[in-house]
Figure 1 (cartoon, rainbow, N blue to C red):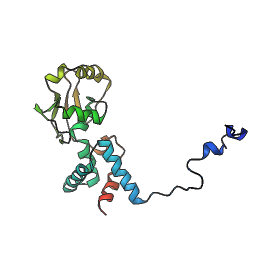
Figure 2 (figure 1 turned 120 degrees about the vertical axis):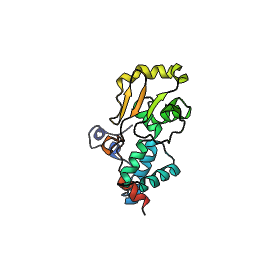
Figure 3 (figure 1 turned 180 degrees about the vertical axis):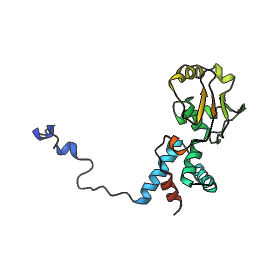
Figure 4 (figure 1 turned 30 degrees about the vertical axis):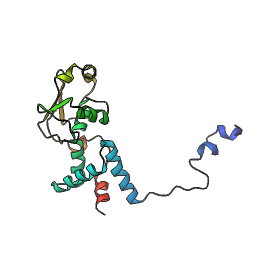
Length: 186
């Protein structure tokens, strides 16, 4: 509209303004930052609050740093491993593949997305699922995808294997386990 010549320069007040006039943005408290970090972890891995608390309790019982244990447990979830192997484009799609029973763990049908994959477990496709159009599409596109270092992948047969447990530097998500622990220990 009628902005004037000033609005064609970097000093334009209309473009510069972020929020409503007269309103200042408050600094987020430490508690708010902790909550944001916890929610970020929950949404990244697609976990509900009750499940997340259960994973946190499990991480507390293990030896070592609780925050690091929590992130490793979340990374070892079956749906996340399917996503990391490249069998799905997103974690929610991987969750659906698992729930529909398309994948096997050590030759057994497992349709529980929260199943914790152990070192040495093999993840493969069911025989009936190998005939689907989606399997053929994954088989064609799998060459471009490289799984994380703690997983190995046989690209011809689409069989994955957990060669070791994930370490903290192998986890892609930029999450801070320490702040999540601080959130729960109030």
